[in-house]
Image (cartoon, rainbow, N blue to C red; front, side, top):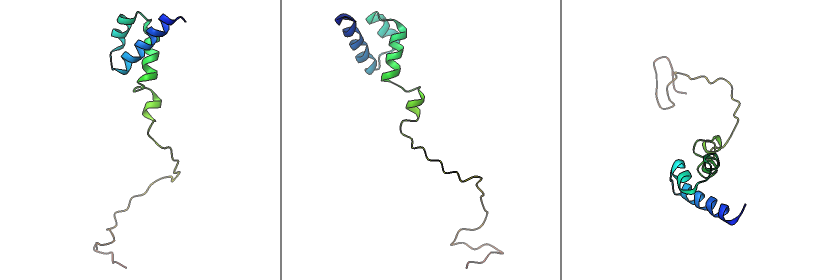
Length: 84
């Protein structure tokens, strides 16, 4: 890759970081659309799985089935139930 190609890729990266659309970057730089799309995915991974999971912590609680009760809260009384 010569200096001209490196400069074009650098310009394309800067344009993509500036939120310019892929088609416009292809027109202005003359670089193949597939290469620009790959660059865009690296720079702006909004639609990738990595971006979706970027700020999440993975914790496996393994608590099985959850049961919900209709009992009153600790500070409430319900007919048939006494506070202890």
